[in-house]
Every structure is written in C-alpha cells, then in structure tokens.
Image (cartoon, rainbow, N blue to C red; front, side, top):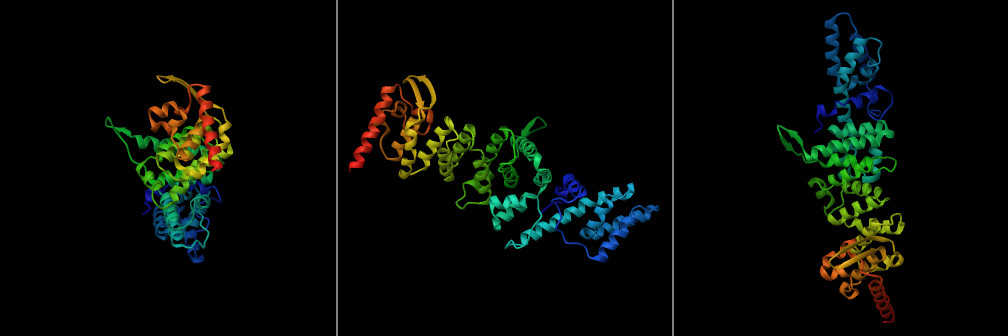
Length: 392
C-alpha cells in the first residue's frame, strides 16, 4: 500500500506548481459543478473571518481529488493566505491523485491506455509492460524512489547527479548508519535498486565511475541476487542487464560486469562477452576477461569465435613467482580457452600455472608462458592438432 507520508514530496508539488509536468497530467478532470464549488471554497481561504477560512479548508480537504485543479490555481493566487492554505492542502490531494493513477495503471492489464507516471515510457522499453513488470514499477513509485524518479523526469539534464546522490544514500544505508555507537546495516529492497538501474541504463545519463562500483554492490544484495538468478527472466533482471550493457565500453567496466555474471552464473554473460570481443573496444585485461567468459560459459562451437585473437600479442601482465618469469598476452588467453572448449588438456600445451593448479585456467593473469620458445611450442601444437583434425 502506498503510504501518505511517502508521497508528500516537494519535487512532486514543485513540478505541478511550475507548469505542465510528469505528474497528474492525465488525471480525470473534475465535474463542472465540483470545480465551481472548489473554486468558491478557494476564494474563501482569503476571507477576513478566520472561521470562514477554517471551514473552507475543511471542505476542500473533504472534496479530495476533486479539489486538485482549484488548489493548483489557488497556489498561484496573489493573496498570501490563499496560496499558503492551498499549498498546505495539496500534498494530501496529490497523494490521492498518485494513488488513483497507480490504481488505474495496475487495472489496465492490457496496456490500452496512456499513463503519465515518472519514467514509465523508459521503463517499459527496458523491462516490458506485462503483469510482473507493471507490479515492480508500481512498487518503485513509493517513498524515496518516487522522489528520485520525479527528480529525473522533471530535470533529465541532472539525472546523473540525482542518480549519484541516490546511490550514495543507498550505499550508506546498506553498510549501516551509526546509532548509539553501533553500525546498523539495512538491506536494500528490490524496487529501490530497480529505480537506480532504470536511470543509469540510459546512455544519455552521465555519472561518475564510482556509481558503477556502488551499483555492483547493490546487485549482490540478497533481494537482487535472488531476482537475477531466478529460473524465469524477471523485469528486474532486464533492467540489470541493460545497466550492465551500458558499462561495456571501457576496460574496467567490462571486467566488473563479466566477473559479476560469472559469480552469479548469469547465462547472459556469454552474450555480453561475445559483444565485447567482437566490438574490440577494449584492448587490455577487459578483453582478457571477455575471452575467459566465453570459455567459461560457452560451448565447443564458440572455440572458433576466439581464433581471431590468436594473433593478438597485447601484453596483459608480467610477473615473477617460483615458477619463474611469466608473461601473459591476449593470444595466450584465447589459446587457453580454445583448448578448454575443445576438450583438450592444458598440461599438454605447457601452461606453467595450470600444470600446478588446473583451477587457474579461468584467471587471465595465469595463462601466460615463461618465454617465447614455450609459447611458440604451445601454438604449434594447436596448429598441428587443428590440421590433423581437418584431415580426419
């Protein structure tokens, strides 16, 4: 149930007072006699007699949603007392207005009517407009999430700033606020996370890289993890994937997103990895992680898709351990994943680290070689076995 206190938002009121906006534009118009009655009562709010003003206030409150238009007009009145009383009455009326619009939205199960709700058009393009999608969106129109979406709808140019601020608030709550010397953490709810994903999935919204780190943390929350790993794709999952795809244009973003899809075992991680590999926008460790993801989540048929990377000698890292000096290149990662996908044994190819610990085959850094001769030997073995396979 929508709570009154959750709806008394200054941005919502300001949007209506400043002119045409996102809230309430398609609410039912009052009947002519109701409008005349409400306008008469609004004029009485400026009466010289205090008792008349109080009685008019009570009557307008009783009229509820039917008094909305007259109160909006009165909120711009030249009389200070009329303006003040109208603006004091508006929050409850607007709360009722929003509840009525949400009820109408949920009742319109076939989506036959237009609905003027903040960010709805953007949401349905990403998450759909079936029953589960509509229910999640209705849950998003509560509390601080409503305020956040209203801010974004009213001022799209500052959506990134609003999203960053909202992420910071959620992050602070997630890790806990200090109360009486104790640090109390509060789990985040799915609609709260969904609202942030909806806004930050928009390519037009610019926000600092820090918000990507915070959103990643949100997606590991219990409610989000359950929605992402459910058997049936849910609207929340669609929003999360839209946000993930938005992060795939830089090395750090690719690493972060693909590691998350692996940790959560999201099958869509394969598509994201293939897109990143084909686009070749990332050149370093992000590309290495993309190739690892293809190997980890793909099948034998995907081995051929990695073949173009066997010529990429971009260095991913060099370090020294007890096995000696190891240098890893993109082509080494591609070869290791092709060996894995084709069902062969990495030990045959002389990967130093995998000989010690086979579990390291899904970590790009550990897929290099001690020297050029060792690498050349491994690549020659692949070429020879491929040639034999073709003859067969």
